[in-house]
Image 1: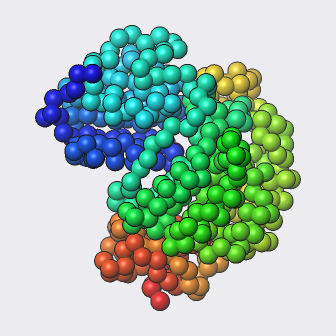
Image 2: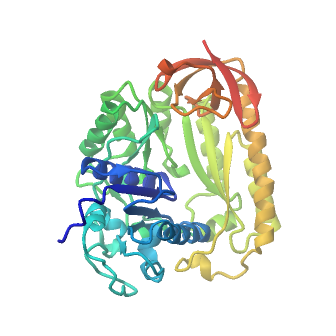
Length: 447
């Protein structure tokens, strides 16, 4: 392999999409730093650009293409490496973007990003619709998870730890299984090692993440579970606060809730995708629960962990969603004791069953329904935050300050709070009394 000139010493990593992409980008950055490169922001002129793309919506795909064009304009002579989900499902479209030398690296080949970046090859040969090249393989055939060790999340107190990749569910609207492949897990020993690395770098909070975290361990030679992994992590690193990214409602077990009840460093915070409150729409989505089962699960969570924050995803405007379907969704979200909503309009993804369904909902209707649910989200957050006023919660103080110059952080149950603190408090867990509401957060003071 012909190496690039030793004078090329700056690299910019741009990340779109989910926490899993952020984990992987942290690994890219660590490798480049170890090799003597300087990291700079992606809006500056760099020798090498790494673009970790997203494809979960049409908007994310468009942003991925725009970002490739933008870095080419910033430095037409730069080496550009495009990876991630959009690169995986649409390599030909990436190739059609003229300009700088572009290397397309598939999701199964992300461990080769550094190699692709420093290679002297222009890598500008035509890519077929289903390319099998040095840096691009068929993701659906991958049986092992790609190891991408990370050292730190620069400028953050909170780190994301990828424990699993891929998904077996194939919800009818979702492109992710086609971009990420089947569910694959890291061994518990590898996860523990990565957690210890984060601890040695000073991180005090770790979020376990993956494409389908609830399926962690089911594919291993010695099958394990997320609950067992959490027990090992919390015991091995008791000084670290742990959170989970999204869990399916069917995967929130009695054992997991009991563990949350009795474990100080497992935070009372869950994120549970609902998507729709209509059983007819849930069935068309290929979701594997009913609205009634979802409701029962949320109520069990609150019964066992009353102070827990519960976030919910809702997908609005799925093909065939009627006003009655939407009303069922709104009514369910309104009556349940949930903390906040993440609301998304349905986006047609070519290659998924839902893209071919009839009765596609007009864009304006989707936007109107999204706006209604986002108002409900504001009400839910305000009610939950208000219910904690006057109480004291442990807060991890973040390095970045608010626009008003106040320190900020999240309580154990994920309430954003601003308060006065000194430099010596950064990256420490301090007791903060929540005193009053302000916009979408809370003002407090260290006790």
